[in-house]
Image 1 (cartoon, rainbow, N blue to C red):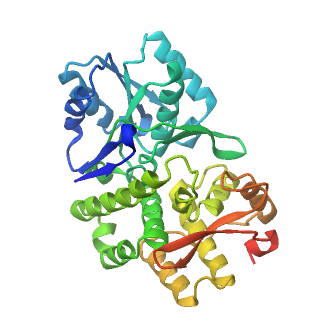
Image 2 (image 1 turned 30 degrees about the horizontal axis):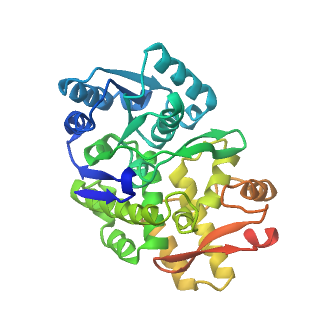
Image 3 (image 1 turned 60 degrees about the horizontal axis):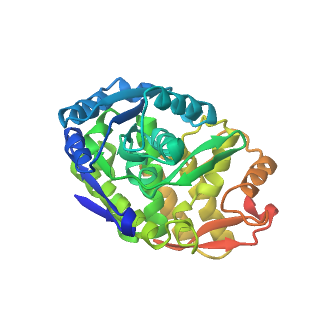
Length: 355
């Protein structure tokens, strides 16, 4: 399945299939000239040989290629890791005709995209996401970046990839917690932007839980279609349309920081989406039935609905004030108004956030 991302001269396609990692080389060869390719992955993905398969495919296409690996996890999304990668590229005489390929989850895509956007004032990159969260969300749209100690994704750029290849077969080796993290983002799309997707998820709980490849391809392609359409309308977040993709994220990003990133992104978004729905209920934007249906789906998929442990509410609200979506220090939330619909709500008083 091909999903176009229509951005004028920066347009590209997302290819969704199964057992298709061997296609990367032929795809990359189509972006001539390519002086060399650098495959960036992490230690966890390395174990399954996905980066090596991609590298072998690129080599078979006649392109010089080598593999770089970093530690797995959010702790690698730092300026220190980026600097190490910049130095490695320079040492290997990587020039502006090279392409950096990211093979891994959202951390690798964000980090690698940021390195590509900044090295030599920008080189091309290609995404090969291997986690569900990266396949449905972070690999699409060109947002790349790294974290600061007190804020997630606070340093970054918009840098569109040459293309994205999704091989859903990689999800079979994904640890359960990582798989659930991806489902947190999938449900987000259904609740806030597409009621039909929400219904499809409800109707396919068991196939989703057993990672049925056909069902997953449909879900991934649909999530990519939703995001691609919104990105095409608001690539650089200037009209306010793209912010709607951030349902649950204002709460979720705060939960990630509070946990020192012990909570995976999609699981934090899952908790944050329920918090946002409860806030919407208190504001009269949705009714009890809406909240109950959303909670029921989260529970059916084994997604979390509450922040674990004691929540530092004042600290969480301070983190929300620093969120990229805030303006002039005022809290702004993406809140649902109906199943498959949401809007930005401003002027929320701090004492109302967790009431």
